[in-house]
View 1: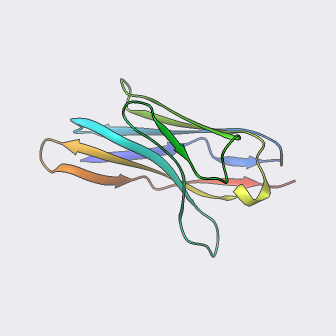
View 2: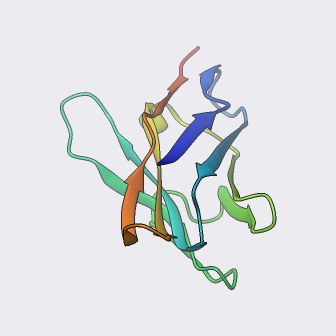
Length: 120
């Protein structure tokens, strides 16, 4: 079994910062692409940013210049540093990873999400 567990969400004022973390655990052979998606109330889930196993990042326009994605391959961790947060960043943030497991091969895994609320 593989689990992705997010942490670091919360309530922050506009202009503030948060750092989200995602821990992958279980029977993991390797992890390829990882990323964050978010879903605001009444809206579809959207991409925030992705990162390859080699560290190549891709950001949605909404987060460019404000968000920084990084990963620790040795620890199977993913991080999202979010600065200059805006009310429109309010959403549930989901961690996503493409993971190779010995039993099932390559699979797409999601965490349960962490709430980020930007409000004064």
